[in-house]
Image (tube, rainbow, N blue to C red; front, side, top):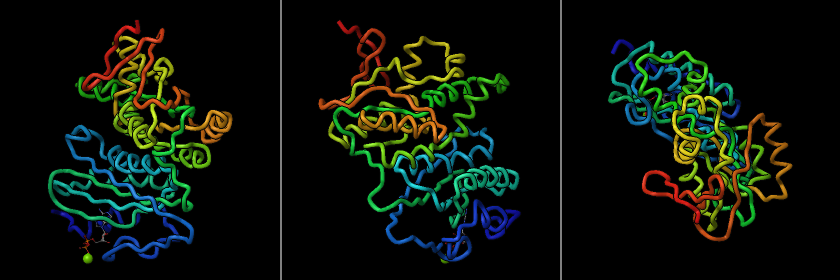
Length: 327
Ligand code: ADP
Ligand code: MG
């Protein structure tokens, strides 16, 4: 290795993100030390990205730096926690300074945007693997959990769904990257997801339950339903689809909805709130500059019911969703 491990850490990761007054010891000692104010709880989330498994090998390093942090911030958003600190475990096949510079730049830019300081990590040699842990703060007892959805609550989702799934197909099928603006916006959705931090914070006093959509809406909402001991009925014609998705999706409208239900990597929030709070939810969304859409409601009967155009029921079958006539 051209740079020593210590030089690499010093050059790229010792001053990454903001400098926070609550950090007593950051990068450089055996452990980081931080101050947690009385009455605050810590929210911890960790996610690993493995080359070839979680991202294609030809993704730009700056995008990877962004995404490695973004997917973790998304988990904090879903808990209503305010991000504070991060640690980074990096396994690199070799020391590639231009890769490191790009990665650190993408990571740091998002960290600065959300007031996060990188306070430590681990650096090893091996197949490219990136693990980030984030630490967030919230007032004791205020976390948004998966287990609070109540019968009659409305089900909401932020942003649009299915973009990352379409982008991945496009990325895998394109030898040369399209310069079409819709394709570029889809690629940004896949490689540079936007964690819905402001919305997550605003939902603390409004939502009854929340989850971030990383594995696909149907799968992630199912976790909320199980944890809450309830079911839900969704009107899948209301699922928010982007114009970029519509322009690049060759299949039918109904197949696009299926993709929106099952496609992963969107990092939107799915949440529930009592119907009486709808105006407050919409006002919070405007304030957070985050689109939200009501897509259904919570029922007592367990399970997820999906109603397509004309009330035709869409049912889960194995890996995806199939239609059959309602009659
Ligand atoms: P130790 O051997 O005591 O575990 P290391 O030599 O692994 O410590 O790391 C030295 C310091 O650099 C520690 O403070 C550690 O948290 C930090 N560090 C190591 N790798 C990274 C990284 N990729 N990003 C940020 N900090 C790192
Ligand atoms: Mg040590």
